[in-house]
Length: 282
Image 1 (cartoon, rainbow, N blue to C red):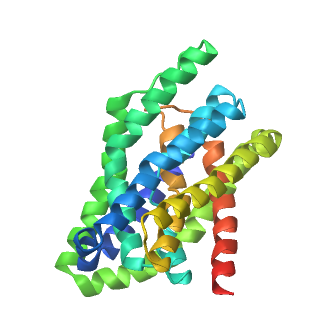
Image 2: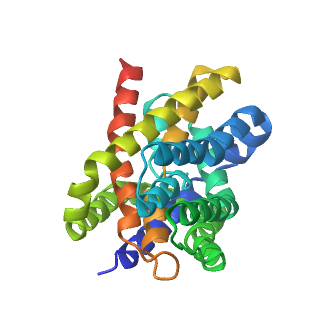
């Protein structure tokens, strides 16, 4: 069973949920605090993929896992980042802004970065990994932009109903992702167990390095403590559902193994960022 048929509706619901949470404050944030928004976007769309590429090369990952670790790094906008920002006493409005903006901008950045990675891996390993950029763009528009836009429209037309729907969907988001992770684990148990040491190390290093570098980036930008915490969380949290949808899609890579880094990353990022939030609140 291809998990794409499970992850697609989950991803659509998560993006629709994000659209229903977009308030006027999220757009005002771009004008009110452009430096924070710019640094957050740089961290999400450029810094994290660069760190992932470097780690994959240093750890000499196999071509399929090399692509997988860079892929998860190219998918910002984790559905739980807003909740984590609230728990960490961060800037929730900024968190929503960064999640929404990065989800849209990744339509353009992801194909460019993954094409460059595909070319590098193909040349280094002496194999051919093709990336159908057109299909990737169409799939991301359908699964990301359309439900996000629909959620925004729904909020504008019926704000009270949208708030109610958002509240209910928020309760389902995390269990849905965990169910997806469980099903994926059951389907690829042997591959995950055999490669958990190396891929787990790569993912843990990626999360910790991204948190450290984004914190330094925010510090250099002279941002407030609340904003710094938000950027650390936003850069560290990734949209695992999007990465799995791209990796397992029969229209793009059609590879369950390529999605393994996304599953491991999703599990580790929740643990590491929860520890980060706990430390902040002590």
